[in-house]
Length: 155
Image (cartoon, rainbow, N blue to C red; front, top):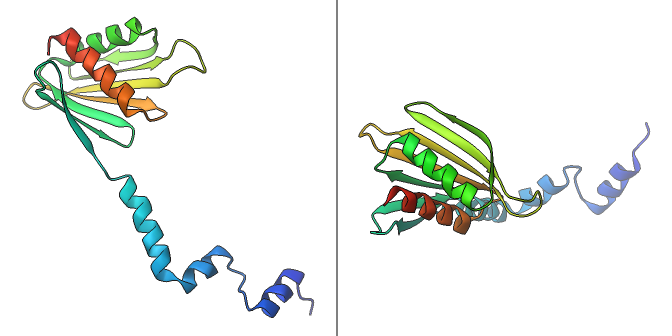
């Protein structure tokens, strides 16, 4: 019966073939702690009031800024498009219905800036939920974009 050299080395050193899994199984509390720290970092929500009267609460989490605006989705989408075009972005995709819409914008140069996706949807109380996602994640860019949209809407 032939024995693999890796198995022979592992047997002589007292290690198992499981590699990293074997190391973490010796210290289960450390593995759980590492997992917990990793998960907690992505669960934080940053909330700020925005707009000229600071009446719009905008929440940023995991690359997306969300807010509720008292305007129709078509108005919010038009303001978003105008804001992004004024900043040199090109609109690659755009679509809208009465209840929802979205657009995808690219920066002026391929390697300069971040792409931005804006999605809007009507709420039950005739307001509009807006979600601004930047790729790669950039909270300040998302908030600056929302400020431009709110300014164009007079909010």
